[in-house]
Amino acid sequence: MYSETPNPINLIAPEDLGKGSGIKLDVCDTEHDMYWKMAMEVLEIVEENNKIGKKTVMIVPYGPIGPYSRLVYLIKKRNVSLKNCIFINMDEYLTDDGKYLSMDNPLSFRGGMNRIFYSQLPDELNVLPENRIF
Image (cartoon, rainbow, N blue to C red; front, top):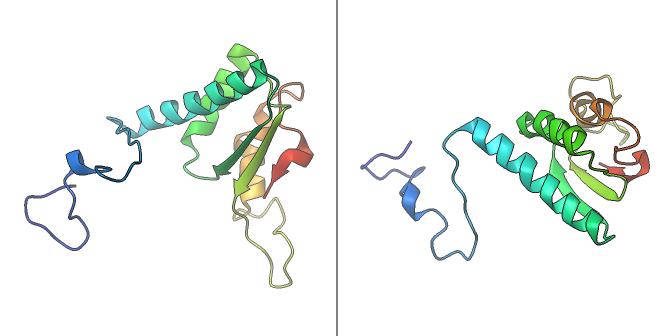
């Protein structure tokens, strides 16, 4: 939260965020608004690329997870195919010998993404398994 007294953690007033950076910044009123905004932006990019036959390549985080249920809802409602998408998922934990954690491990991002997103979509609309990169 912004306060009038500057401190090392919070030196920029909310209205000054992004000024002079060249980065477009949208501020949402609530966390849930942000989830819907993120889901809509992903969906719109995929829809636009699908219309022109272009692949959609996105780097997607495991968290926050709130946008994924909304994205699933929108994909099903609008019948939008993710078959032409490549999702580069950030990140994944490895075992000491450099192998992926088991997907049933609660720390596995692969398992988490499968539970909250990939398993919630019908096969005919889903990102192909080989295009789910971690």
